[in-house]
Image (cartoon, rainbow, N blue to C red; front, side, top):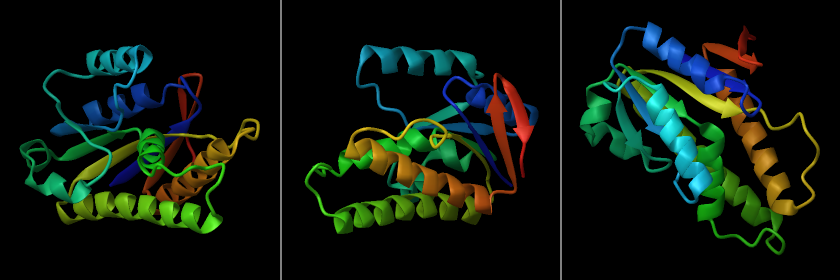
Length: 184
């Protein structure tokens, strides 16, 4: 079973995803993709940690998902909660060190391909080990067009990633003001 939960910032995505995982009554491992790079992100990570059950295992990882199969927290769980896909995409974008003001579109295309390879690796490992997964992601395409190229590249890649994971998911929810709406 693969579930995708999407919505805007602070729409209740994570709260709903945690509720679904908790109500599954399965052993849950939280796959955290954020990096604590500033005080704001550190506070956000702390709040996320405090909101989930203390008995859930946590893996902090946004790439190299093939190594999950060697981790006790992965092996011992039945359910993966990934929060969040757009942060994962953002981290991979930043890891690339591309100069988005000067790079060629071929480089952007190669980067997008490598991002999809990471995501497919995650999905493959989860399926091979018969885990359920719920993926939290942000819906980015409902706002203004970013004025800078990196923002547009991020929005476009994240949008295509969201379309892809939604297309292969069993269920998709869109959260608005804390209310989840099942759209698939």
